[in-house]
Each structure stands twice: as C-alpha cells, then as structure tokens.
Length: 409
Ligand code: EZ4
Ligand code: CO
Image (cartoon, rainbow, N blue to C red):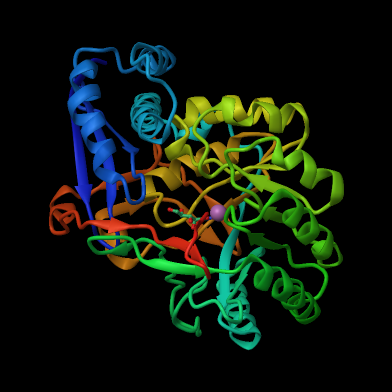
C-alpha cells in the first residue's frame, strides 16, 4: 500500500473547504480535511509545496510513523497551519487503512462504545422570543442539547447570533466568515454582555424546563475575573458548559475561574496539540476538550489528548462548526463513537451545496449522530461538483471596543 498520489482540492460550495486526497498503488483513496477558516490557502501551500512531495512512495499503513515524521522533521512544530496539514494526512491515512480492512474507522479505534452520539445545535436570537423560537425549531429537528447565544442591547453584531430569524423549515445559517477582501468589523462591550446574559438564561431555563442541556460560548471575550463572575451567576441555570470564557492561549486563567464557579468549563477549539492542554488537564481546570480533529493533528493526536483527559474524568466536546468539512465531521464521529470519555459533539448542519460536493454516510436521528458503517470514514468527494465552486477570499470578523480598541473576537 504505497502512496502514489497526493492532491489538494479547494472548493467553496457554501464556504471554503480544503481537502487532501491520497491514492495508493492498490487504488484505495483516503480523504482528510485541512480547512482553516480565513487562512485556507496557507494550508494549501503547506500541503502542496512541503508535504505532498514527501508522501509519494511512502507506506500508507504507517500512520504513527508518518505523523511523527511530519511533526518532527519540520522542526517548526505546532501551530494551526502545520497541525491542520498533519491532520489532513493523518485522517486520509486512517480512511485508507479502514477501507483496506473493510471496516468503518470506529472499528479500528476499538469499536463502538455507545449506540449514538449526543449532538448539540446552535440556537440564537436577537431577542428572547426569537431565541425561544430558534430553540423550539432545533428541538423539532431532534436536537437534545442546545447552545444559546443572544444579541446584547447596544452592541450591533454579536458572535453566534444569526441576522435572520430562525423560523421553522429554515436551516440555521449563522456563518461568521464573510466573503470579501477584508474582515468585517464588529463592536463589543463586555459589561453590557455580563449584565444581559444571566437574565436571558433565566427566561430560557424557565421556558424549557430543567432537563434540556443548555450550552453557551463566551468566545474568548472575558477577563478571568469577569468569567468567574459570569460562571457564578449562571449556576442556577445548570449549564452543560460555558465555552471559551477567557482567551484560550492563557491556560493559567482557568485556575482563577475554576476557584469561583461550579459551572462546567470547555475550551480548546483553537488548540493544536496536547501541549496546549497540559496544565488544563493535569490540574483539572476544565471539563471538556473542544479541539477539532481537523485542527489538532487528526485522529492520532486527538486520541492521545482524550486518553490523557480520561484519567481526570474530562470528556470530549469536539468542535463541529460548518467550517469543519463533512470529512472532518465524519472523522470526529468515528472517534466520538469509539472513545470511553465521550461528552457531546457540536453539530451545525452543512448547506445543500456542501452536501452535493461531499457525499456523506453519517446520520442524525432523534438528536443522535452516527458515522455509518461504510468502510473508511464514509465520505466521498465529487471532484467535478467541487470544481464548480472556486475558492473565494473570506475572513472571520474582528472586534473593537466602543473606544476603538481591538478586542478578542
Ligand atoms: O467561531 O469555527 O463553537 N464554535 C465556534 C465557531 C468558531 C468558528 C471559527 O471559524 O466558536 O463558530
Ligand atoms: Co466556540
């Protein structure tokens, strides 16, 4: 099983996706997602110019060795571009190995530890009635856990809040990356947010009752003491988790937050390796690991992080926004099904054009995802369809405070 071909496919059906396709001399193909929202072409170059030539002629079965080779031989290790590129190779090789074995990937990871994968969807509203409609719409679709994001009075555009009402029949389509030559500027006021949010959760919890798991994403915007205050104030509403309450690069910040609140904490969607979690896991400062398979070195590195986390009763909460392609989602689902310390899986739904490019065998029924039982990861890419949607420049937005200071977005 020698790697004969390594192609990088860029397509922009509803948004930009980067996919690595490996082909072996026995004619097996494997796919890996390498999409890094807003910086896609950096990973394309990393793969095309620096990785693909090194893969040709290598044994496709040697996944661990290839991972270590790519990680260590670059010398310049870690970082989102490098780790997304390595992830794409890793997932493509797992796809090939599972196809060679004639099994869905989760069987190679130890087999199913559960029947289905609890997923959470994204509800949002510009006011409470719109938010309650959005929650009701998600429950109609089967979601058994829901992330709640709300607009803040006085702030024009807030992360996670769709500009259109989320009425029945329409899929949730909040997509932060805007196509265009430069990033959109948004405004932010942390004090206004902190004043507003607990009241919204009071109303939502009152309306949905005690059972439904509710989540919230702070998107890196608070200082440690602000996050501690929010965590404490949200305790009566029994959150499943508070995500990214402080900027993710400072692991020590979570120590302070943890001292003040029992609201469960989740972090890690911008992390790339186990090293980003070292303090957080060892000191039990978080409850959920938020990394994406796509941005964290693939199945091989994620399995190591989650096994480390398991020793401390820390669970998975794998990142699954629409900027993770169906290939990256499928890889996550195989891991979710196999590991013991599964927590929850984020699941925004891809748009119609994306689903035409990527044929998927994973399912979503009664709020539970399943990767399906096709050999490999279970996703095919229609190259002709992909070719209809050329890359379009797109950027994530960024934030300024009322006085013009750039703030974490
Ligand atoms: O903003 O993936 O929990 N989910 C998130 C995402 C991120 C995007 C950035 O590309 O925070 O919506
Ligand atoms: Co997030």
